[in-house]
Length: 276
Image (tube, rainbow, N blue to C red; front, side, top):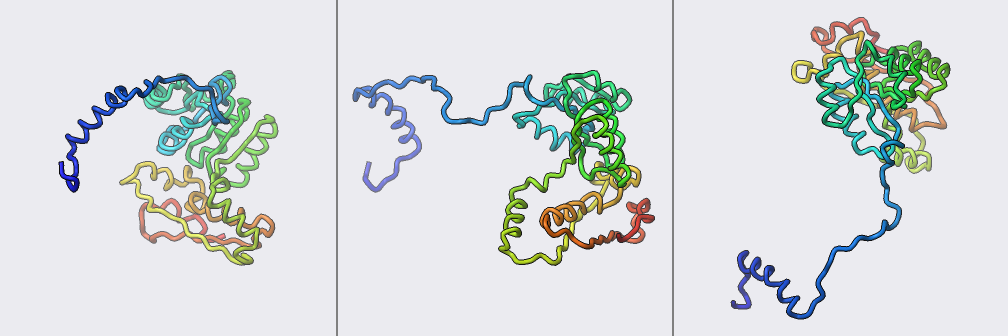
């Protein structure tokens, strides 16, 4: 074969196939697989019986699409039960993820008798957060509730009081405080790298279209939505602003709801204040 020519795929495969024989003929030692000890400090998951057991309350799009997959990769937690109003869906998802204990919204309080459940994750519409958080706390379980915490300050205070009475932990699943980009931004602010913060403006939103995406439907129902867009996506701007100013809290905050005047999607929200 001329020096300036390139081997074709058949020639390369043929040469690779002959390589082991050439090494053997040359006296190379045969390789064998051998077991090795654990090296370093690998991050291994806890044994199943030592992980914290969680009951997932609500198997909607967020619970099934994001919360449950997160537990699959968790190293210190595991899913112990599902709570859903759809028994068929719960059984199907349970079979897929190895969960065999199921509850519905009527027998939810009976989780008190299940020692396998340490914590409850409330992944329900906002209007149901307070009720099921308080019921879970009364059942003697720790609770992680999705954001926003509840629809009113009174509901939030009732949830906190229930946690104190039950001597259990209550948390709100607000992830922004743990995201690397936000942590780095806070570091730069505290180090004075970007000067003094005097004003923060935030803009959050999405097109709520229940015809195209059914999970948007509950957000447009006043009783379940819990407060409108400010409570939903607007909370990111509010809480992130508070995070970025830990030593100099804002002296004032305002928000504005904007929607088409005659849009039927927002007819239940027209009584909501447009500022505050």
